[in-house]
Image (cartoon, one colour):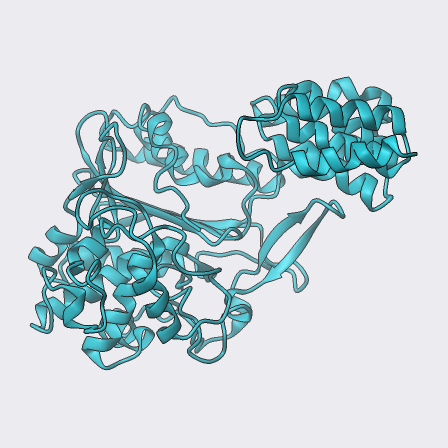
Length: 498
């Protein structure tokens, strides 16, 4: 999935307006503030590792939460995480390395590597793949952990319909970087992981960075965790390698995500880029150039595997984030200030848990800035409330959520999912109906929520309220694409026959 690069940019950059110069006393205070922020967040379920460095010196490096809850292994700066789309910078670096070796050029067209390219795609260039202006749709390619041979992916890429003519517009699509991985393998005559390992990771002694192969104790890998809203429990997702095919049928994953690393290894990579150790100065300049705007406001641009933009004081920031839906990674490089912040985590609690690196940047830039701790997962908070209150306290739930998250309930699926599971699986019918009813009060113009409430009443044989809810759902149907209307219509017919 595409985790929008630098989602919080508009909000967070308001804080990044000062230089990062720190006196020793200020630096120590900054370390304490970061640790206090993350320790309090850890109490609410945050689990990850963070590294902050300034002018080539690490000023903060620490892990929080569990790498493996069952084995009681804590996260440390050496813990291994899935880095999601932060992977893309390694794919881009591999292309630039092949260019330095004279084996390709970014102006090359994919027809050069794949003569079977159809007429609408044969002129797509390597550059367009790198900056994601190929016109390929984000929907091209399947679920990242479903098996897919390289030939199957290439066929899907070549037979898909382009969204627009190549080179005319930027659209973030993972298939661009999967195709780049195929080009890397074609040109180098090596598999993707081996090329990266031989050219980058081994020379830099990044011994805990890789793709599928693991040459170390797997207990160093952080397990991913997610909140299971059916049971109201945190579940162990396991590690990425359990989901990737053991053979080479991984062509919905490769190139665009699922590389694993540590904050320490990524910092080593940052230093290598800064010192032109693995790529030339010219290649690094190409990698970090703002080629195309990512949005209409021109606040963010895309380079080669990095997003590039300016802070409010016009200093350059090179960054990228990534996620597979379980893990989250953020890699921020403040170029003129020579500061880097790397945050890797193994569970996504809420939007705040994806802003850790930016909150730290704000603390570094503004000594008076003191962020609130990351709150608990919203689903967990709902379960906390219903486990300690009776349904007659329902009206207090929105305030309870807002007080703890800092925002009112905005996600329509939150109460819908929990409420319907409580009813459909006969867990707590009274709370289930109460949650579904509250959701229609919070979002009264959403016909889908009324349809779900009707379904809840239908399951407990409350004909009167079920009919009312279904009729309300149909009253709110949109002009097109009413995905709940067939169900509501069918149920009304069934109920009228009783």
